[in-house]
Image (cartoon, rainbow, N blue to C red; front, side):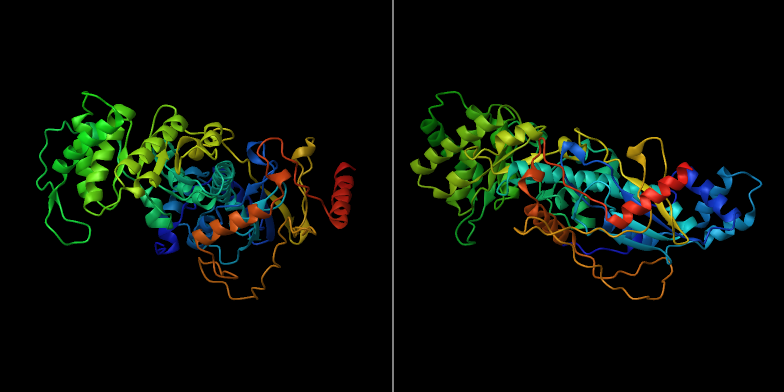
Length: 509
């Protein structure tokens, strides 16, 4: 797991990644003498995404990094001065220079928790001016992360526990920050890793990658590597010309497969040899650059069997076009017959990976018990969340100075629940739901400038991933269904109902 650097270096947002009206409200609070009034906001969503009955709470680790590093620099304050009215009191900008989150308190669902409509993902308390400034960046950090994690969890539920899922959507993501977030939180949601190297460096996400069609098409077959030889895997014995051994194996493979006189593509074979020389212990073949059955498969087998003579074991193949399910089944049959023919038992069970704009429907096909697919790479449909591009989180004021606040609106669906609250999850007799642990007692603790005091050690990303999968395993099947699930019941206590009723009556009088 990659070591995390200082929080400011890893912060996914800066203080001015916000809407201007947060700054104008801050000026209004300050001018009214209310900047330090204690207030509490809640961040939640109103409806589960993708037509499902659950979401996964995510983005907390990014929020913590952001809050720890929160400080308006001179350049930030100078820019705000340039966009606010020119007659703004200079004392306001001096006040902003001293603003940090040392007096901010955050209560949150643990990273990877199941979340449901109306239940706060974050409860943010502190000076009114400060917690107002935090609205937009916290919504940005939590909303997309939770959406990605939930989308990944749905895909994992479709794939089942055995298939390996790899996120490979960086090139399709909504910008570099979106790409890093998608790689991070698709892993939390249940993917096995990502192609995104930066996610590995900064967040400890497992990374993997092999070769693309461009590598294969760059070879004509006339290239001569500086050293075409390879030593045996055991380290003893003479070096062997791998290209020559692959050519010798090709004749035997083609005869077995009944391919006749048409020779598989020479350039593809040269590319496989070059890749095998670079990665003899991790050789994989991309089979569909030219023709899977007439070129990709025999060329791969020739090189894999040549490596096998030297004690190396090819690790897999990948398909990136066509009917992935049908091709995977056909390729597995070929591997089994070749394995039996040439007494190479390791060959029949090597990994078959597939990719190519795979969505939920295609994933369901590939997850069939007899699909023969081991690894599934998903890009666009995980990082862009095409079924629902936004979770729609909101950040609403629930108390000021210890007094409950409630948004009264003509749209009942947009009314808020007043006051500081606690959420409880009831445990069914059959253990089908998780009961949350009591809030840890942090003690008063001194405020540290530009730093939050954590009540307990923050889990690693891998630990949060495991917690998310555990949480999902306890969710009842009727709530876990991806189509027409039963809504998860979220009820209000009698005390909260009474408070809502009293504030509604007061507001309508």
